[in-house]
Length: 116
Length: 114
Image (tube, rainbow over all chains, first blue to last red; front, side, top):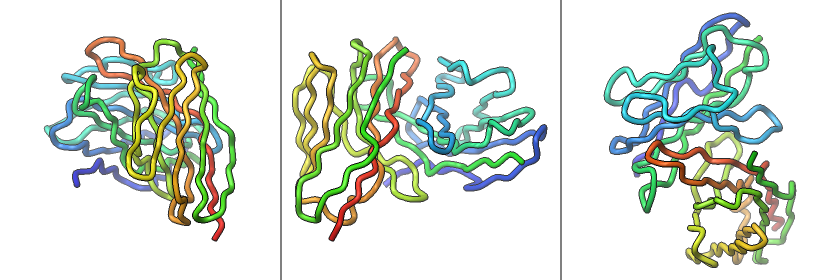
């Protein structure tokens, strides 16, 4: 069964460093998403991406964040200068469509980012 | 903004039915979802219901939607120890062709006792 994969599973970085979190969405999916879950808090939407551009972003997704689909398979989230409060589990998701029966979002296993 | 709320914890005995409840505030919610998260794992989509439906059954899972009260529930029949996990309710409302963000509840931790 196709699945969303994410690497690395755990990333430790120092405050102020740049990190890139990587995701490989399901191959025939067209819509891509990043969410995060700070420990003990709700899963929060960060950004959605379609047709090589951001389609929606939340207030959390400020200028420190960027997303890219550098090739036909990868989808990345870059945090330019990490802060302590960026420590969280980051989930990538993808969906085949934006409506109807293909809308379901499938999630990867997550990358745990620890900023020290 | 939209809000989704769930109770934190539910404990049941193996073989009993579990009912996990969720309330939401967004009256334009179109799809409502249930995800399962096992320790150390990602979010596994269990089932979803479209807002024009009242009920959806999928093997041991039954989803009930009361749109008037903005209440969603997930019933797991014959609960097994392998069902122990955190269950997240999520909702979305369509806003065009750009894809749709999910708004999640805080998750209900289901513990199944043998």
